[in-house]
Image (cartoon, rainbow, N blue to C red; front, side):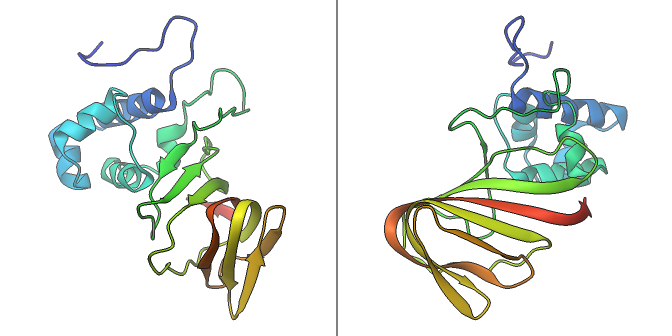
Length: 204
């Protein structure tokens, strides 16, 4: 076992970080690549890559995407072994969803991915989004598929195309992802809502 590798206790399944790290190391070695080569291609330092491979740290989605490109594989390949030995069910405990970086993410805004695709295609992405800072202007998002929002806490003005909707706890909003959309104003913080993006077909 490489020095510094964080092994799961006997009888306990590897964590997400350990599973992803092991997959990256296996794919890198299968392609005959060194950490230095993957570091150069991905723009991620060798020290950080080493920590990711040994499960000592988690990587954001942007970093994982760059590593996947450097390895010449789809991003889903990095998650293929996570919980694969037990079943297709994924149980994410409260507060344990992977924190990811999306365009517009800033201090006070967090995106937690609540499920991880293990197959060759991406069918949907569920996020738990928390916002508690209304000091900056928000970006407009556009993406394939349909998005469903369920408001949990706070109050937000959410723009979809030319319309603006006031969302309070219990409210839902469903729209085509290709329509420009995003937060317009955080009326009452903190704000928390579920956002589920359903893709119309396999998206690599």
